[in-house]
Each structure stands twice: as structure tokens, then as C-alpha cells.
Length: 176
Image 1 (tube, one colour):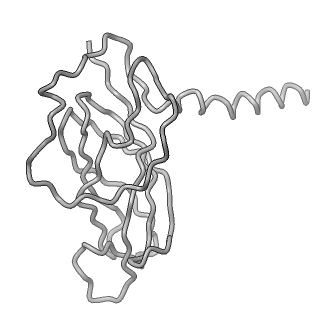
Image 2 (cartoon, helix red, strand yellow):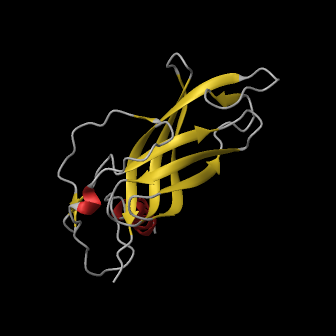
């Protein structure tokens, strides 16, 4: 009986780790190879970039000949007013692939750099290659005490914060 429970517990803990490789295709099919023109940088005027957390050296994380890139997605134009229950921001896909899901580690700090909170959030969105999309997630601030430093000031006093992020994972949609 205890061996069965131990086996079930070990299996339950191991199952979420199978899909943590960084890049998971939706369907198996041929992979489109990027061309030189799709690799050119977008030169349009963009909203202000949200700061990115420093990235340690990458290990050999290769999945189906695609290398995970910690700079494949940018976060732009973060917004959270004190009265908001949601945080909104823009995600920009810097890859030549269509992305369907992005996992971000978000770090919230005071303007002088002290950490307030951090969390990992999965953002389901359809990001076409080299495109930008607005996303919303539930706010870390359930008591409505904090506002983002770039958001319009409120008449009620609150605490300002800055946000930075680390890209943990993204899913590439493989289209036939």
C-alpha cells in the first residue's frame, strides 16, 4: 500500500517536469527555417522597454534543433494604476516563429531597487512573428496599495513600484 502511494507521489511530481524544456511545439510538423529578411530588427518607434533580469550563461538546452533564447520576447509599456486589479503590458515576439504561450518570472521592486515580490506567470497569447500584442494578467497587488512608476498618479497616496522580467519559456506553434 505504501509503495503504491510512494509511486503515485513520485509520478505526480515528475509529470510537470516533462514539459519544462523551454520550447514545446503544439503539433509535430516540419519546422520553417528563418530567412535573412525575417531576422532583421524592427525599427519602428516602440514604447519603453521593461527592464530584463540578467541572464546566466545558457546550458545546451536544445529541443528539436531550436535553441531557447532568453531575448525572444520583450515586454513593453507596463501599466498598473493603484485602483487596477489587472496589470497590462505589451509582449513583442522577436522570433520568426508564431508563439502561443509565454512564461515570465516577474520581479516587483521599489524605485530604489528593494524587492517587493516576485512570481511566475503563464501568459496565453497568440504572438505572430515579429509582432506585438497587449496582454493582461491579474495583479500581484490585491490590496490596491501599489502603482507602477510610469502610470498616472492617483489622488490617494500609494507606493510606487518598478517591474523587471525574465523569460522562462515560450511555446512555438508548428504549422503544416
